[in-house]
Image 1 (cartoon, one colour):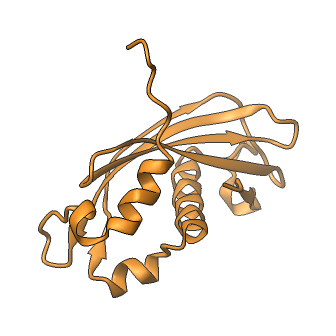
Image 2 (image 1 turned 60 degrees about the horizontal axis):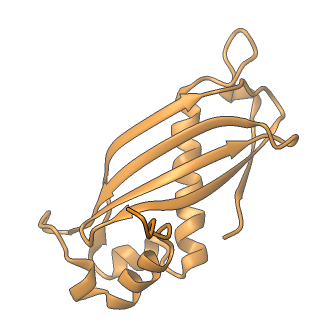
Length: 141
């Protein structure tokens, strides 16, 4: 998967000139939309299929600051997937390949009625795609 590139906008910085921490969460969403686009399952397709995927949890570790007009590259990995719940990892790096932020978001899959959707039953092709992206399990444990 190709990392998503975001260029820090001036308005995303605080009075000290650093990117405000809340923007990293927004960038995660931008990168997630791009990630699903690359998988062939863009958000429009989700909605057309009657599927929504709300965020249930977000966690960020800010490791190095960014400023205007830095480029931030966001790579996403599938950490866990259990059919209804999805956990994604984000590694954000700058132009020098220094990690600026490590983050995780958790999501569930719901129908528009708010009820959980078992992706393996309703969308087996999407289920298989996400499962192929899971990290290899350790054969020793």
